[in-house]
Image: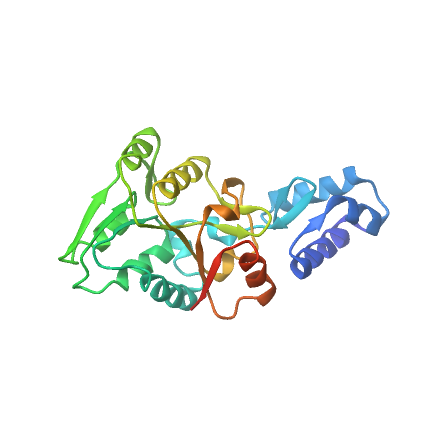
Length: 251
């Protein structure tokens, strides 16, 4: 069998099963694990999968640039954002991560809502300018232009001085085993810092993030309390979340 044919079969199995294991692939194709690892390495370099210890997971398309991500699963993001907005109550301190789904979230907030929003996203802050009763605390730091958010030591120090009621976390991948992941190391650190200062952490998980992984780990699934998903999400994935104690809300 040619290498390209084998790699196509690997991708088909990955799509069908949600993960592949190097040992199992080695037995299936009767070739060495070294050869399988080379195949996975090449597929990862082409952006088709995310390598993990012992195998690979689907890679997340949510690591694209902010402008590119705005066009992904738009209708689902709007539904998920509306459902997420229902979790916000007047008087709360609400931490909001950067991202295209959280941009939809702030658009759903009523004009008479009185809350304080803490964010490291200039886009989120600007999106709240016309909300007359929402106070905005913008966390400073180095601007990470790919995601249009601030990162670094100054951002983490600013976050450490706040106790919030709820944090809406952005993640590029959410997987039962691989946990919560993102495409940048410093972003992962910031997201952990936000979560550590909130009484509740929520992920607004649009379809392209489900059962996928990126290179940098934010934390395991236990880091979050609630995930908001599209109503058409696979039930087996929903069950895998609920068995881990995560509240699943369908939009």
